[in-house]
Length: 310
Image 1: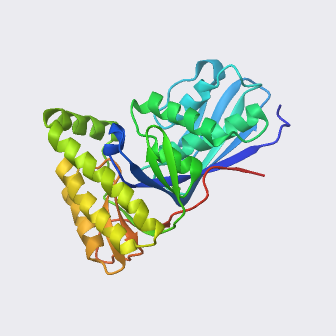
Image 2 (image 1 turned 90 degrees about the vertical axis):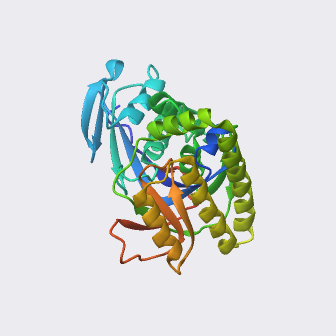
C-alpha cells in the first residue's frame, strides 16, 4: 500500500451570515463558504498505524486504539466512523490557509476534507455530496454534542447556502465581499449554545419571537441577494445584530467592531458571525478599518466547495 497514490482533498472555511441559534430550532440560516481552504493529503502506508502531520502538531497511534488529542478530535472521530474498512494504516498531512483560533469554520472544513479523502480511498471515487454531508455532520455531533451543520453545508457545497436542519439546502449563486474582524478571543460554541438555551427556557416567548424574526429575515435576505440588492441585505444584517444582542450573545468588543463596520462607507451592513460571546463580526463590503485595533480579514464568498485534486 505504500506505493498507492496520495489522495489530496480540500474544503473551504465558512462564515455564518444569518440565522445563528435560530437554526437549531428549525429556522432558516444563511452561511457562506470563504476563499480560505484546508487541504488534507492521505498517504497509505505498509503498517497499521495512523499519523497526522499538521501545523497544530504531530500525532501517531495504532488504528485500532486511537488515543484522544484535543487538537485533532474531529479528524480522529472521522477515522473512528470508518474503522474496520481501512486496507492499511495511513498518514494525513493537513495544511490550512487560516488559523483554527479564528471562527472561519475550521472544524467543519477539516472534517469535510478528511471524510472526502477517506471515502475517496475506500470507494475508489469521490463520494456523493449527500453522503459526505451526512458523515461529516455525524462527526461534528459526536465531538461537540450539538451543531446545526450549516458550516458543514458550506464546506461541502460551497457558495452561499440557505440552510435548515431538515436538512434543506438552497444554493444562492451570488458572491459578496466580506470584511471579517476577530475580537481576540472566543467562547466555545457548545458553551454559548448552552447559555442561550438556558435563557430561552426562562423566556420562551421572547426567544420564539426573536427566532421567528430571524427566520423571516433570512428568507428576505435570500430574495435581496437574488436581485443583487446589497443595501437591503445589509439592513437585514444590521437588524440581526440587534436581535443577537437581545439574545444575550453580544460583547463590548464585538459591538465596537460592528459599529465601526456599520459606519464605514464601504460596508452595507454588519453583525456578529457565529454563536457569539467572542470570535468574529463581519461586514458586507471591503473595508480597511485603519483605526480599529483588531485583526481584519478581507474575504470573498467562493463557489467552490469540497474538492478532490489530481
